[in-house]
Every structure is written in C-alpha cells, then in structure tokens.
Amino acid sequence: VLNNILPYARLAFAEADQIRRLELLGKAFLKADGAAYEPAKAFKKVLLDRLPDLPERYIEAARAILEVSDRLALFRMLEGTAAALTVARWLIARYEHLKRSRGFLDFNDLITRTVALLSRPDAGAWVQFKLDQGIDHILLDEAQDTSPDQWEAVKKLTEEFFAGLGQREAVHRTMFAVGDEKQSIYSFQGAAPDSFAESRQLFAGRVRDAGFSFADLKLTWSFRSSDDVLAAVDRVFADPGIGRGISHDPDALSHKAIRTDAPGYVEVWPSIGAEMVDEPDDWTQAVDHAHAPAVRVAENVATTIAGWIGNGEIIEGRGKRLGPGDVLVLVRKRDSFVHALTRALKRRDIPVAGADRLSLPGHIAVKDL
Image (cartoon, helix red, strand yellow):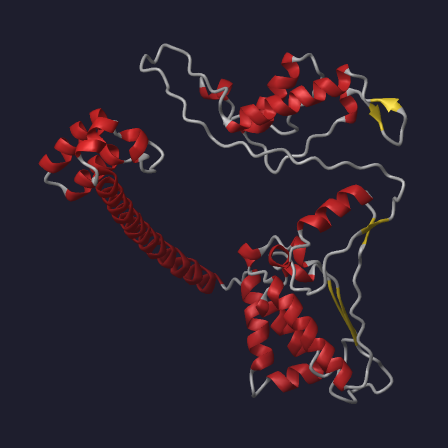
C-alpha cells in the first residue's frame, strides 16, 4: 500500500490546483471503491511497531479526504442543478409564451384553470350552481394517480352533493372512487397517493355529516395470482415500517386468491453486485464482460431453466413435464439482461422467443455500419 500512497502523495503535495490535489490524495489514501484501507493489512508490522500511532493518523487523514470529497460532490451537484434549473426556467417560459400566443391549453392548464374558476368568489358559486343541475354521479378511476389539483376540482364539484337539498330534490347524488396506493406510478405527472387517503377521510366526513352512508371497501381478492405468491407479498410488507412505504392504511396487508387450487412458489435469490475487473491495456485483446451483474444473473436463470427441463420437472397442478414454452421471464425493462439471457439460453440449446421489440438504431450491428 505504501508503494501506492507515496507516489500519489508526492504528486499531490506538489500540485498547485486544489481540486487536482484532492483527487491525487484520494488515489493515494483510498482504495478504488473509495473506501479506506485496513491499517493492519495496509502497513507492515515493522512499520507499525516503529510508528504505533500510524493507523490512527491514517484513518484520520482518509476520513478528512472522504469528507472533503463528499462536500465537493455536493457542490458540483448544486452547480449542475442550478444550471439545469436555469435552462428549465427558460424552456418553461418559452413554452408558456408559445401557448399564449397561439391560444393553446395543455392538460395541466385545463385542470388548474378549472380549479381556479370553481374557486373564484365572484363566479365559482354560480358555476357550481349550474353544474349542480346536470351532475348526478362522479366516478373516479385509478384514484391513486390523481393529483392534488385534480382532487381539488373533484372537491369543488361535489360541494353541493352533501350540502343539503340541491336543485333537484328527488335526485340522490353519489360519488365513487377506486384505486390502489400500491399501484401509483404517475408521480411525474403530479400523482400523490397521500391525497387519496386524505380525500377519503374528507369525503367520509362530508357524507356522514350529511346523514348519508359512506362505504370504505377493501378489495382483497386477487383474480391473477396464487396463495403462495400473495402470502409472500404480505409477508414482505408485514413490517409496519416497510408497509408505510406503499400504503397509508394502518391495517396489515391481506390478500386472498380466487384461484385457490393454483400452484405457486416464491424463491428469493441473493443479489449480485458489480465486481472490479481489470481490462487489458491492449485494445486488441477481448474484454471479459462475464462478471457483469446482468450476465451473471442471466447465466443463473438459464442454468436453472436448463436444470428444470433436463431433470423432467413436473408442472404442479397440471401433471405435465415442463418445456421451454412453459417458462416466462418477466423483466422491468428491456436492457442488457434480456440479451444476455437470450444468449445464455441459446448456448444451452433452449428455444427462446427473445425480446419482442428491437431498436434498429441502437443495435450493435447497425452501429457498426
């Protein structure tokens, strides 16, 4: 380790530029992954006997380098964020100018202007009075993906629903909302699952204060999955600290399967991280990418499937031997793992449909043209 520390340390103390000096000190005192060396392994016993305080002083120096490096990274992130916001501010202003000049309204404009209209003290009540004559029921689907502004519009539209007698005394106005906080995926459009829970409490109070019944129903039956899979999901989120990450419901998750006779099995594999692999200096030599996490996971999956087929695995509940067409691999996105898995399966002579979509400009064969 000293052979690594001393050369970089000499260069660092001779460097006038502070940023460059910090980088050299990092190379001298820290490992490639940014962590400090273990003093007992980094320095020989003879040296430690001569300098008993060396480990403490080394750890102190490494900690100082890490602290300054973190602060520098934060500053760079701040600079980058400020630059991005400057560009975004100009783009938004330009976009708004183009909309106004052409008389256009986008989706967000329709929502915000509706809320603004219904909230105006001089016109909001009149608009609600007119709407009250034509709206009998409001149905809100995928409520977990409803933004606060959209909820505000719904609240304004339903103010007269539960405020006593309306324009049509014989009509009983109702509202129905269905959603699942765990399936909220449109936060980039302003969706706020928190608003779902808050609005449910608000409407429950309004309805009951008006003397009507409010039904808060939970749909716990699954038509798609099996008991084994659902039980595994419930077990993962049984911890209150973890459960709060997906739902504001204080009750523990409990799912039940309609298909009670459907087989199921859940197996959790250990995660695979990246490994440091030295690439050859000679560019003509092939680079071994077999240690990439995606490739290693693909090899494990392909080996498992080959074992099932080779050992005559019987599909539970169907009584037939498993074949290549009985296996479906679900992925979060079509990335390098999909291609690695396809190659791994083909090397084992296992028929595979492969990816169902191909980006021609992004394919290596097209890039090489």
